[in-house]
Length: 284
Image (cartoon, rainbow, N blue to C red):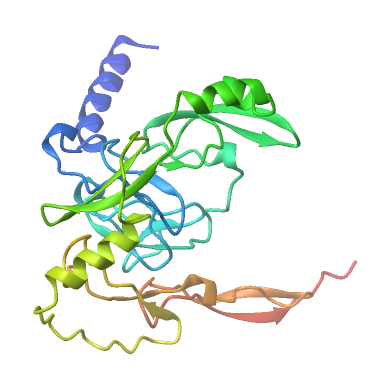
């Protein structure tokens, strides 16, 4: 390998690094309250700064510093219009994408996420892995806890030294949620209940702009609006975006697919158009 090639390789890496790691420093960001009571998994943004409830299907995601969140397992952050993954700092929509199959727990690495370690239990055996993931779905945080999960004496000592109390209170006009704080009492079980109570108080006399009623083509759906915790009105409206699960691109057995028109990945052109023709086998 020539010296010139090595210099070129190093230089190209130096060019790509700033583009790949363009997150604002964590100490300069304001994160939402710690998530308690999520509909899905807990997540951390790919910048490794803020924890949040993983976003569900048709919810907004991405954005600069991933402030709109990271998608739950099996979902991908796709552009509002397009067929691949969103390009940060653009905002996207969480949806199922073909070509990105659902993976087993220990195989769901995402190279853009921080490194995390933990353990799962499969067929009664502890499987401990280290991987890049934004989804905190480890059953145990360490091999010690996993391997001693059936040891009553160990767990009795463990629980006596830990506080598992959690909940939320409204403090200074905001929901403050905590986990593992001994001796604390909480008015709300989780973040969702607390936020509803907060909104009922601060938004009693607020009138939000009337939302546009979308009529989307048959191959697409309207995404979910986004209202930040503690705010009254949506900051992200609904968009018509492709629902690729509605695309039927399989031909009956004995017929072959002939592409007629490639999809553009926008509502009204979400699915490839093709014809199914009889597959004529060559005669011998």
